[in-house]
Image 1 (cartoon, rainbow, N blue to C red):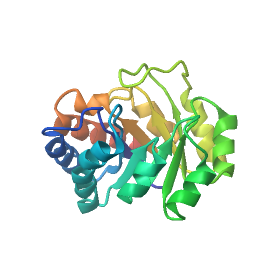
Image 2 (cartoon, helix red, strand yellow):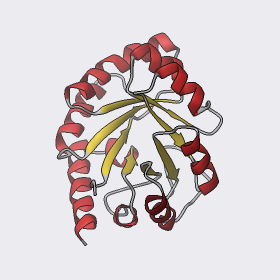
Image 3 (tube, helix red, strand yellow):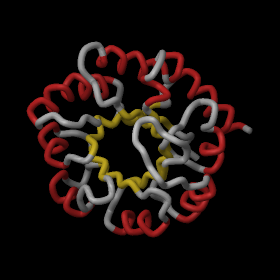
Image 4 (tube, rainbow, N blue to C red):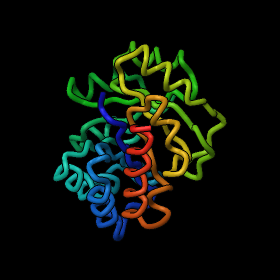
Length: 210
């Protein structure tokens, strides 16, 4: 069984010193962080590509998958490792046609078993469930329970991602329930990213061995 891993999601502002923060966070994670999602809003594709390129290089140097949020065209332009699609942001089959067989395609499934099964049938490489806890990053009325992760990991081979308000203090039940990845953002970027990553690694290790 592969240990649960961290899936870092960027803050909306990735300018200035953020590349240095990303480097520090990835290096402090003890190898737990294996994916990074580039998520910016309100900028054109040219500016998004300019902001993404140094972050993509940092991820490539550490063998961390670089995933673009919601934008198949930008993912293709960058040669990103994959794309994450929200409900209504595109079809996984069409994304596959654009990005190729090797692309990692993830789909938001909220708290829905049906949406997750549909995503799997459409060729998604992972499904994301949440928000498990109240989130300051993105509002959601969906509030699944950890048993959704337990059911999915027992029945399906496609990895599942838990998202939404996850912190080192509350992540244990999600790890124990079978989440393959914890998607985290505010818990890392709202303070000392190195301390947060170390705390996540310790909490996940405890949950995996309990």
